[in-house]
Length: 143
Image 1: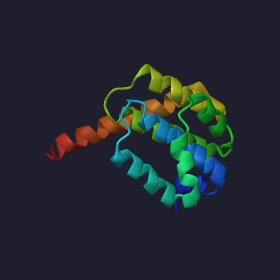
Image 2: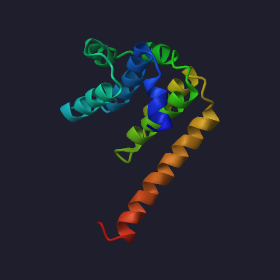
Image 3: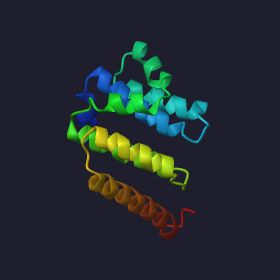
Image 4: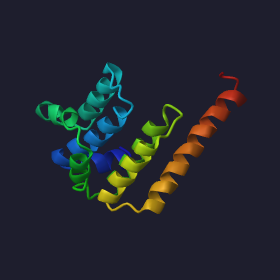
C-alpha cells in the first residue's frame, strides 16, 4: 500500500466521513451532483472501508461550516495533504477554478492546520501535473 492510502485508512470512521463530505461538497458546488459523482464517492467510501451505515452522513450535510468543523478532526498531516490534493484535482477537473472552490479548499486546509502557502503549493503542483498529462497526449499522439 502507498503512504496516501495508509494515511487515509488509519483515520477513524468519523474522519473518513469528514474527508468524503468535503469531497462531496466540492463535487456538488457547481449545482449539479450527478449519479456518476455520487457513485465515485460511494466507491471511495468502499475503498476506505467506511461502514455502509455511515454513507448517508457523507451526502447529508450541505452546510460548509459543518463540513469545515468536521474536517478539523483530521489530524494526520499526510491525510490532510491528500485531501487538499484531491480537492484541487476535483476543482480543476472542469478546467474552471471558481472563487468559491478556492475559498472552500482554503478553509478546509486551514481547519486541518495546513498552511495557505502549502495549499497554494499543492494547487500549483496539481496544475503542473494536469498540464504535463495534456502535453504527453500531444507528444505521444494520443489526441
